[in-house]
Length: 244
Ligand code: NAD
Image (cartoon, rainbow, N blue to C red):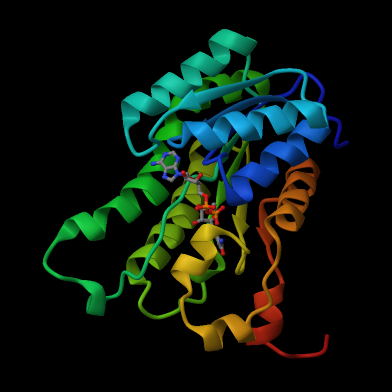
């Protein structure tokens, strides 16, 4: 059942790319939305569009997910406004070349990637768990196919995404499967981040790119089915060109 009426959905990193398209996918199904990002100008426009597509109520919150205080703030503001929380989509993420070749003895280039991609997801989840237990809700985690099939010059980014899989697999057990967890490992998606992470033209030519709106629809459907994993299959076709 993909009807989202009266469901409260929080999406982090909702100002652009996959998060933005998720806001529209959930908005179309009538979900109540809490959109989180550090880019407020864009977030205002995304909220307007989500309302026009069918969401009865959208709030926007400025929060940096890599800061625990900010995660408390967006979870509390959401629950204060809507009275409940049904789904947390941990989507906010950043990435740029981060292999050993890119290391210049300055960790300000590498640690933000793990701070946002790993800790940003974990902090949001820890703050939301009490509310998701009450609603028997769901967490959607945006990892990456690079967690499993790494591309070089991206070791820190790849590792931040692989750490999410390990963390959330452990959390399922710790929670005794009381909260649903869908781990999404997208391939290459047409977004700002997609083109920043994979710069090489040759690789871009090899890998089919999927639009963020197509991926958002698949994520929503997968989460509604209660899937534990959603793997965007286009990379698999490149890596394993077998006919099955
Ligand atoms: P994007 O850059 O278009 O959007 C990311 C959004 O997150 C932006 O609006 C940005 O402002 C926000 N954000 C960044 N840091 C934040 C912070 N500290 N707090 C709150 N918001 C923050 O990128 P995207 O491609 O839509 O990426 C979304 C997610 O999908 C990321 O986790 C990314 O790693 C993952 N992913 C992307 C691809 C791809 O090819 N684009 C592939 C696999 C996984």
